[in-house]
Image (cartoon, helix red, strand yellow):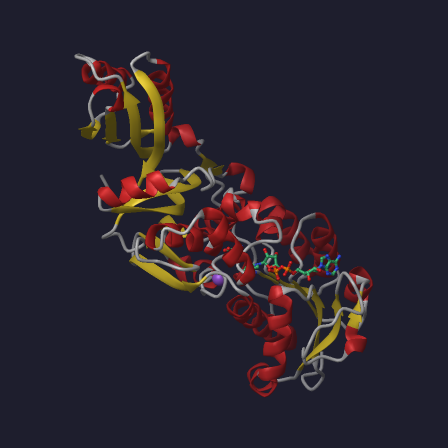
Length: 432
Ligand SMILES: NC(=O)C1=CN([C@@H]2O[C@H](COP(=O)(O)OP(=O)(O)OC[C@H]3O[C@@H](n4cnc5c(N)ncnc54)[C@H](O)[C@@H]3O)[C@@H](O)[C@H]2O)C=CC1
Ligand SMILES: N[C@@H](CC=O)C(=O)O
Ligand code: NA
């Protein structure tokens, strides 16, 4: 294309992120033109409903259309920017655009984690770019470092807080004692939550991000179905209080680890010591540790959710894709040569914090300890409190295969002397 002709983009979606993309395109138009070497122009904006009052959004109303596919197919569209979300329609749009040689910028982690392979294949077919920095950890530049800067190194682990909504809720529960519903409502108002916040609180959103991170880090296609997922709706005020007593807090973590030629990828709430760097990551902030063989530990921190921070990442990708268009080049394509086996959760090494209500009579502790021994799970600490019917045991284990820990908990639950299992939490980072 001629360097003087504007680069024209089809914007799909004008919600929390889409409106901020429009604003940034408007506010930074001159700088963007200088950085790209040609102006960026919005060719059209696909929305669900026409005629909605969009306040002071700096855009010509005639650009709105409800025909996303028709917009993508237009000859004057160079780039497709998708900030709608969801799977089916988005997949159709993006595959159509990529196959036709239109580069794509998307924030859609759900689609990338479910069927990223189809998008990457379509990008290769159409010789187009597929950028998705906003899909994981919002504004934080994380995917480009994994996709480019660290390609001379071997990543061994990626651990982090990658969901802003749940971090906002857990931080509120830990610091102000706010209730779950109240904190979720506030996170939704602030534009952090997904259209269906179940995706946040049940860990689906973090699991999608974990799959994307693991795919990039380990040069292996990892999908959401490969990720062990447990949400944070089971975390109670009691768990938080118990964590506090032990000098810990609770965070929803994404953990992807390489061991030999296998990887494990999991998302679950975990107890971590207050001295752990992730413990201090509050509000809707995200933080991700990347450990590599040569570089050692790297930490990425910033805003993982919210319209404007996410739009920043989208704009960065738009600039990269527009520059490539103008110079007739393409970003590095998908790297999935390693094809490592994904280990099931049962094979992952974890530690458990188990809180039990038990009968207070001689031999109870020995019986409980015997169950751990039988499953070859070693106990790190035991605390007993209360008397008579109120006796409570808090046990923290050493690291063991998750399957052995789960079997231990199952057997404990079946004992007469165990009145109830008050909580089971995994432990990370030396807590306990
Ligand atoms: N809000 C955030 O903090 C972040 C969001 N994302 C992702 O960005 C994407 C968009 O998220 P939000 O802006 O928060 O969602 P949103 O729900 O605020 O916006 C989506 C917009 O798409 C529109 N839409 C639905 N169906 C459509 C159709 N057929 N044609 C055209 N428009 C249609 C909706 O009316 C809505 O305005 C999602 O994939 C989300 O996972 C990624 C990172 C952060
Ligand atoms: N709902 C997500 C938005 C960003 O990806 C979150 O809360 O992190
Ligand atoms: Na990012």
